[in-house]
Length: 454
Image (cartoon, rainbow, N blue to C red; front, side, top):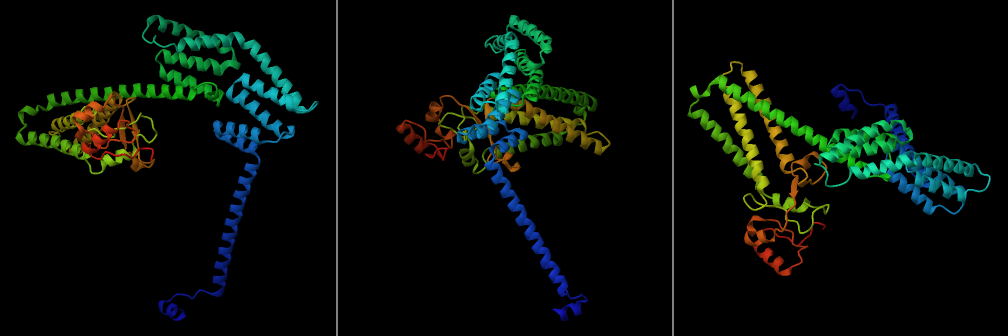
């Protein structure tokens, strides 16, 4: 090694250098062992102290986990009051300040009051808390009863298009705004206000009201389904806003295209080569669409991932070929894509006479993308939203490219019997009629007896 280093002009590493490298490795290994021991010690300490772990989950916003930890600690803790009192106090504080449920908070404080020894600070604290809650409940009884009646009126079904109902909800909204003088009932008032806004078909304001509730009482969902309602409100206003934007983009695109065609006068210079280019663009879309539908292995992929959550009633028919019953959504997707191709072609036509090629390419690219996105939004919200369920193989980015949209069908058996080849990949495991199963297995391609649960 020394001779080789002399030949290449390099210095030979000394013994001191090797010792320094060895000591460096030892320090790194020792540091890693200390870190592992610290982590394991912290985990053991958290397991031994469920109260600390519950407080940690509360700080992280995982209120369901924190509540389960407190309940589990109360069930497993010994009968000594000294071990149960801190857990009961934490649970009572959780109900009172995070959930806003005075009834359950009062019951928990009463349990603590019975378990605490006479003369202890915990007993005095429980007595004060019970007195405070009872005083608040007596003062707010009339207002809470009024809020309860307002909630029942807001969620009453079958009155969405009734003008009288709309007028009553507007009066209720104004009345709730005047109730701001009750700061202790801010969460209940905002929750009722959110329901009222949903009844008035104002989902964005409902979303804001529900957000204020969760800011005031983060665990309010333990007494009311606020998270589900907020998600519904948010999806509704996002849907409405996105549809309006897409309609605006389509209106601007077609208006601009019409003005541009009138300005460029293509009927004076358009020839058969330009028309042939448009036909080729349409044929390319048809070919790409058919390849995407009939890609090898696509049916097997759908059979593996569709209905993994058991959302749809079994049996699950995982694929319908175009042209068969229940495949109208596929046809609409084809025509939406064809409209995008046609609009892009018209955009290319009216910009063909522009002298600045860079500007022309920019207009065609941006315009085509905006048209495609707007038509995609229109297609999804008109034919897929709330009508289908999206399934991905995994949570990675590549999972979006193999995702499957599943639609609910009603009574598909007549279609299966009359046109079995149009339904590849039928799940047979949950069909109760053995004769139908045998017939489908003989006539339906890729029919499987294996259920999705497996």
